[in-house]
Length: 454
Ligand code: AMP
Ligand code: SF4
Image 1 (spheres, rainbow, N blue to C red):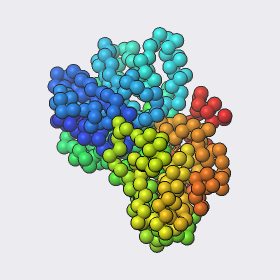
Image 2: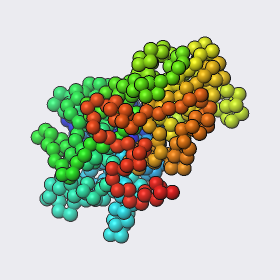
Image 3: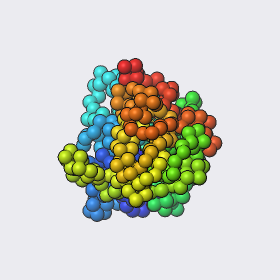
Image 4: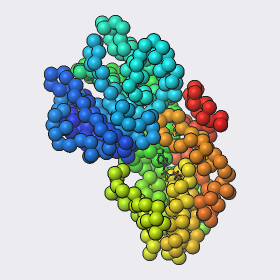
């Protein structure tokens, strides 16, 4: 998922549209935006589908103003469906407000139960709605920031929230800093984004990252900062660097492409393979494959091609067509791999389906050997922080050792990057969340503990 907020910039709906577009890789389930018009009224448009499918010219022109927030919804995260589309938008005696969210609150069930016992009714399963209930103000004269701080103190887990009133934007990040959230500037206005790649597209200049536990308030007085906790840590999700973020984004001072390239270099030093060419799995593994190629001296080749136009609405081939070799997303380049010993670099193995499929394709296309190198450690634990990495039973490396996994995917050899190298590939970082690789969850897990101990 991802969030994008704009304060004090003309044509807010167009800026959100282009910005959300650049973050489409963070979610294809649905998207939405809420903008404040010149009279202080909030207008919203949301829908299931890609940004280009949901927003048409008339929606953008009907929502102009200078303050707005937008969201893209991630497949599999939270619950799906129209009720879970964001931003959410509430009418309240103390003023209307809208919310959007990235991440996953791990104690949401506990908090929802408490609120329901007190009479709250929920429309959705989204953490944004939970936050809305928690920040309801009892005293209309009390500044909203106090109720936001009190609400966030009760929440445990991964969250980046944007809260918008008709004249103010609040951007909050959980005290572990699981997912990125950065501030940019256009003239006298500000943007807040889950990824810095949005800044280049909309012409914003990077200002700074929002710190773990920080709540940034943006209004006509400029930017102010508060913290909801004095126990803040830096547990950035390693999968943001490994798979999730776009290569042109910088996360807490480290560029994502540079991270992946370095992880590829280290992967070669830790697990060299004797082969002829290096091939990366498009798109997320191309940087790591480049790094592996540079460190090894083996040429980097475009052995796989991705069809970029396979959208979610595309009719997938039937089983019989699949068996005939009709592949929608990836195709091997026969003239490149035929007769070659290939090092296949991928960023991660989750269920093992991708690796198994691609090893098979490369062999069919004539590769004489396929050595699989994964630019992350073995994924052995589920994630509860908003990244859909599957359940414990489905994780291939939770069920089998590396030797058996190598046989299962049909490779000649299989190796993974170490934890140390995964951490060190991000220059300057001394800590990250690696829980899906080592089971060391930075937070208590509440009811999710049952999903780890099966
Ligand atoms: P699998 O085929 O289940 O082993 O998944 C591994 C592939 O999915 C890799 O090629 C990754 O690039 C990609 N991947 C890794 N994490 C995720 C995620 N959270 N959601 C979707 N795809 C992912
Ligand atoms: Fe990221 Fe894995 Fe931690 Fe989840 S458990 S936040 S995917 S590193």
